[in-house]
Length: 190
Image (tube, rainbow, N blue to C red; front, top):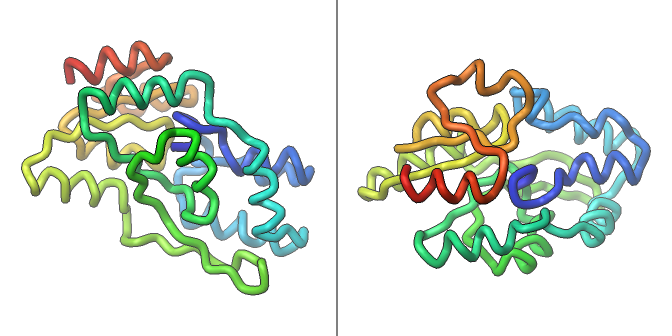
């Protein structure tokens, strides 16, 4: 979701709070557990609450063309968003995107402080792809960073979208796209 359909929430929080280390995303740090542990420590060290983060998110809009892109896909296909975002972050974006089906993580919050995150299962995106395939669905997937690679490799067809430098060279079997129109055209033939 983030970086593909919506802005990166953690970058927006970093810009709002001035905590530069919150700008690190899965585009730079492939180990999601390490990344989230660091983020939670930074939030705690700087007294940033869930309410603060939700305030930042409430001022964000989905990326230009994202809603139209999803509407076009939904007119032809079943669409599921597999994301490393959190239930507590996503509601406003889901409203803007026309309430697509979202599978994501959950935060544990105590006294308005984020204390940990809960992944549903290990490697949830890849496992979700496998479950859809076990139901005989053809899965076409797109993502923008390291935390998407296992999902893209497991899918029947996988595409890197607006990816960081060097990622396609590390995974040359994956297709690439830079615009929603390129991605939509690839999906139609994948």
